[in-house]
Image (cartoon, rainbow, N blue to C red; front, side, top):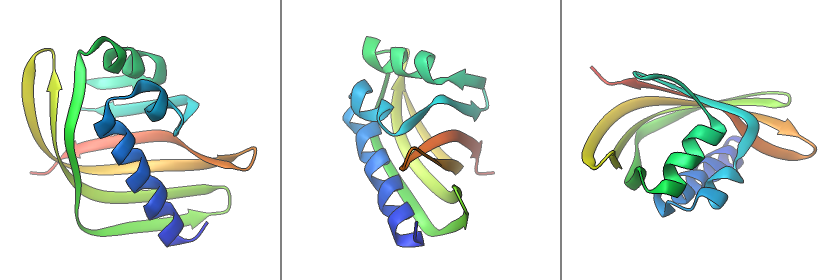
Length: 121
């Protein structure tokens, strides 16, 4: 995978997240995907159930600045600053975070296995 292809994949995944379509989002995730954030570790099925129920929604995700892309064989790492607007539990949340996604190639497809977000200080 080239750097440009990984960036395009990440952009498509961001578009899926903003669509609030759990099936579309899930198509980008490995079965064992987790997100690590200020609130702890959340697995794929819990995350997607929040989206399906309407408890979690996103209206904006924008990469800010340059993206750092590294490909290591069947693993790729993308780090970028992201500003986003989400709704969680009925509250609006504006976030400015450093996001790292780890993609793995499985059966010829690139899937995200890990997302880690850290607030920009």
